[in-house]
Image 1 (tube, rainbow, N blue to C red):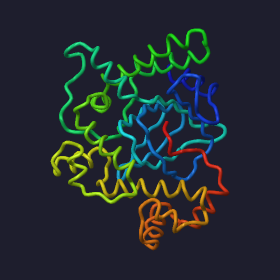
Image 2: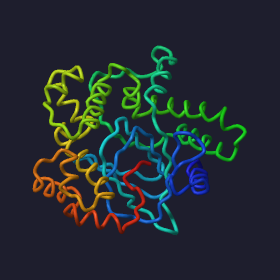
Image 3: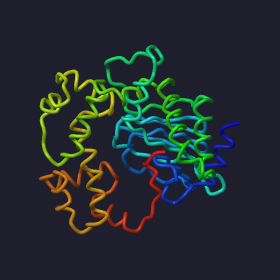
Image 4: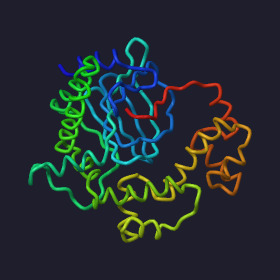
Length: 301
């Protein structure tokens, strides 16, 4: 019932850049299955209405299709691919950016016992579940507002808040709730993730990042791997290589310089790790990027 209307709304309002007239709401419409593409997840709810997608985070692989939703509670380096998408039946997806401040406000307004207890450990940064009817209903009502400009400014914030409530009380509620808790395990790891993202070209000691996160080294390492499916050093390498690929798209003739800018002192190591990650050496991949127009399949939803 909800999926049929959801597909109709998504198909009608899809734009090439995936944006909509409602802040924080994205619509994806993809008519081909491209090779896996690296990107970052953002903190987002993604619902698939038609087609299917595969998302890889380190060694973890998440697959989701019609009537399923994915939650990303940390901005993580991922590789995404639409596995079912064709011109006659394109993949259709809904995305909503999750703001920690909005989750925190919702939790403050909730009564005692209204939300299940959140443990101290950090959950995985990405999770997939079947979407309950109440969540799909709220998503459909939010998208209907794209056809109602007079009502949109007043009602859209209310429906987005309802969607957040459906999430924090859902099967993946622990992941979403920790997004809004200042002293949760997830918030400590998010602090480390932000630092590594901002200083990815710099060497660091895990002990220093653990201290920044307010954790012992063993607790930090355990929680970081639980959230990101990677060690801190592996996470840094993923960020470096993704940033290098973005730079090579605009500086294809300066492979050595790009490697140095993202933190590689050894050009051979940069080329070797780049090839292992993207399937081609930097110079060859840069040429391929210049001649290929790609749908941003790694971007949620």
